[in-house]
Image (tube, rainbow, N blue to C red):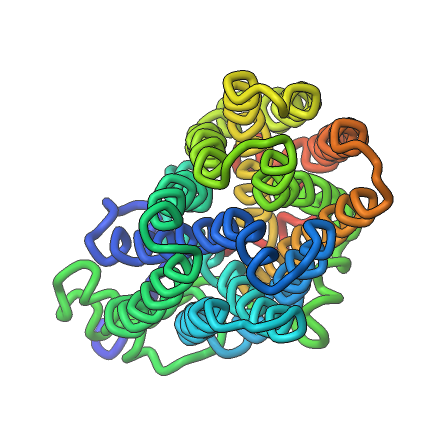
Length: 459
């Protein structure tokens, strides 16, 4: 036995043991970045009518501002995801958070449409780049038995940010003016970026998959479990070997292509509808005679529903599966969204339908996040999450742009929102087909099909 080193499978170790303080801190920091993402999305939507008035824009022109930030998020998601798979989640998460903090702060000083487009684009790059990192980190530090619930809970912080951002921004506008929204919203991410650097460990599965020095793995395990001696002579195993070639192409190899394309559909359409709900609702309500502060409070009510829907998605997905959780949620969410479009002149009815829209679409979208966090192997997980979120950001670019274009052509808002309500229905149909592709999975009702199981055995 002398000289023989014990081999430890870190994936099994995390799955079998209790959650530690280090894991809680890591997932909490991911949730904090997600929360800031939600706040930023609400901030620009709530401030839009006041910014437009300040720099002399028509309401329809603000569609290009929304789209510039979301296009930046698309660039960040698809660009930073593969980089995170190659160089690590922690560094990219800290960098992305600092980036969107800096340019959110600079939004307060934009003096015309052109500068506003630039600062919102660069803030969006940071927001988009953070997303695949915090999805991967949460998935990789969560035990398998709690993974779906913890990923959904982490993502629910986006809706929590929308909710708290709605109420907080309404108070800030009433007392200090719109620029203070971006002073606060820019400073806090810079602080959180520093916290990520100071307290978050790198992904263990990433380190092992990249063949990092085992001493780095031992140091993190000793920090997690409080015993350096337990891992002193151990070697480590974990994810499957890193694939060669372009990581993006790995999303379509080993028969993953149909799964990937079906996953992208609810991301594109679900997040596109979410963008319209978050970004255009204050402007549409304002056009109907609702004050900015009241519109902000209605967005807060929408955020409460979205938070509840997001937080419950993991448990419901594990219990009922794709066909009986996110599919009906998207369909019913489409109905609630349509009803909101027909009642935007009534504050009470708008609040009810916005709450239900947030809860139902939030459940569908959060379920999609949980699924994408499980179906790809560690070596391409950030790439998979990044490209899925890239499709989400693309939907958030195109659907609001279409809405803004239709408004400029004097199409009634209620008619536009009726058309948009079809998007979640199509997302539900794609998820129904996805459930058939993933049928027979070994990781609960949300997980992988047999065709990808071999490539993700250590995911």
